[in-house]
Amino acid sequence: MKIAHLTSAHPRHDIRIFVKECSSLAAAGHEVTLIVADGLGEEIRNGVRIHDVGPKTGGRLSRMTGTVKRVYQAALKLRPEVVHFHDPELIPAGVRLKQAGIKVVYDVHEDVPRQILAKHWIPGAVRPLVSGGFETLEDWAARRFDAIVTSTPHIRKRFEQLGAHALDVCNFPILEELVRDTPWESRRNEVCYIGGISRIRGIEPIVAALPGTSTRLNLAGPWSESDLRAAVTAQPGWARVNDLGVLDRKGVAEVLAKSKIGLVTLFPTPNYVDALPIKLFEYMAAGMPVIASDFPVWREIVDDAGCGVLVDPQDAAAISAAINELLGDEARMRALGESGKRAVLNKYSWAAEADKLIKLYATL
Image (cartoon, rainbow, N blue to C red):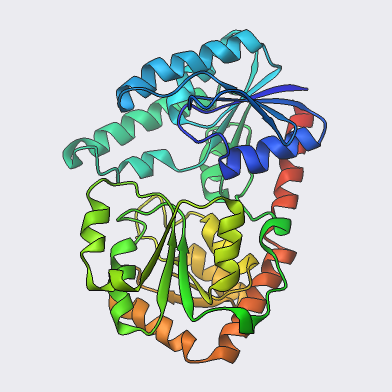
């Protein structure tokens, strides 16, 4: 089958889009093209052809108009049997491609209407209006697409209630990438946070917690707010941070292999309380205990796997106490890490999710 994945906002080697979905479909024998907008040129990797429509220019409005138009035109010219798009701003393009006779799959990474309610760049007074307006558009379009792929069962249920053909393909780890037989004794007395860095992902309480511990934080990921880095680096706890920047997958695996605890303390925003953050499962796959936000969905996972400690993510003292509690008991840390790894091997791996995606394409 000739398939085109589309993104106007994500990087070309995005973990969910390229590493997992596109590469899995190519390995299954499909002809896969990933259309991106980054100005880095053409590329073939993992059997996937990456087609670049040129760099994004200007701000968000420019991306949502000019960049989207170029991505749409490239997809229309390619004439694939199926278009699979990954950004909400591409919904109008998806509708037009459907009208052109192409089957269309919408990949919903986030519960966007709830995510909008926490967008710092949208004035607070108008967020409910923007959220409601987008949800109306998304619901209308979803009923017209051939399939909706979601990142969590919670989001899938919302689209199923609309009568859409919805399937959850969760963002679980690729076992070959992260599961290693790392001797516990070789790990350093360090904790880690991997992924996007923002206020609502909890970076400020994490750094504020560090002075009350004897550990260091391995911090890897992009900063999403221009003023946030300056505010966080001014905290006393920043002296205990190993600022690693943005790492490739090999670099991420190395950080996970040398750290003792993984932190995933996202704030209780409407979009996060029902999410399945990939970092949670990557920490588990790497065989380390987790300190996670005490949300009902996350509590069920962590308690069932026996892999960590739950805290109030906005309470720096609670995070500090949890770090000290775990670092003070090597045997417990090791046991929690091994339990988490077993849970990933048995239940939370990408291989099963890839099989679901491939079977969906067979129905198309």
